[in-house]
Length: 451
Image 1: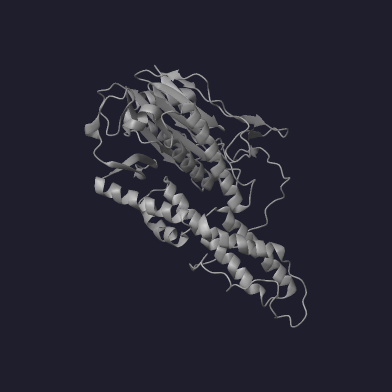
Image 2: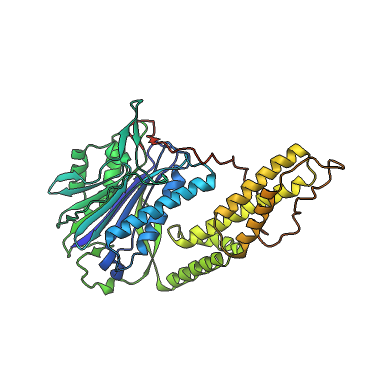
């Protein structure tokens, strides 16, 4: 049996695209044998401030974690581990913004492995199977109704502990002709199940995803939410397809003529994207060397090198790779250190009230830098500065108001952690107290789009 993928995505009538999707490599024969083909949809929650960033972080973390699966790990174990990793990535967004209530995303992922469908889900994004014209939803929607009568999501990425995970015990045995659909709620809140079934059955395998998105947009729902649809069509082995996966693992070595690099390509007016863009072998080797450089620089605490290579990574559209995460963390680390150093320097000639304010700003900035977990000496220097500041509280002193504090270290005594120059970000608000509890996130207003 051959899998033929198709996908569509559109921003709808929202101001921001908060849907993300991704796939594992369907032509990596060795991985497909034990890991199958993965499709994942992550929907940033509209009731939170950082929904788009949560979706990107959750998708990238989930893909990277699943692709590290080893043959001795079951598909279910790998899916559960990847979900926890994705949740950790969203919680990291909360720590970065010092905003634990400002994050949240739903996630649904489907794996087709040896003609079986296995899935995992939190939130209200969905997985369906179309068989002989009948559409069946497989995932449970983690919805709840509050005392105010409003609908809320009860389980989602961004909770300290995931309260409910949809990970069924039994697989679904697939047949030739089946179509597996993974989608955000922007699709099924715009189209009824009979409408989705009709579009899925009528479209060709390679056009099913874009056809669903276009059908949703044609309904002209007020406030149309972001809409994403991934379709994996189970076809006979002789069905032609530019990108295929034979889940019975018959050899197709002649098809593997290039190294695949994750990318997104604009696909038509519906805003759909293509799966992959092929690169030749030489380009693939160059990309591999670039990724290795960034990761090695990060592990050595050489953030200047990682930051220098970051634009090239972005240009090559490698956001799914571990290297771009390392480069981003280095970029945030350096900017936070610069912000802290600037506040420390200004303290020397400031009044008592201003010294206290600048002291708090420097502490926040250094804590933000430490939270990025840049290894080696770079982080150690910042931790030392933070420790000194935390032990020193600005007090009134003898002498002129402009005299520097004797207990405060000067900016020149440290070196090496942040030599890069650039605009400083605005100071962030103090983090909430530890005893604040997380509440379920309310669904997005603005029409049937929901989340």
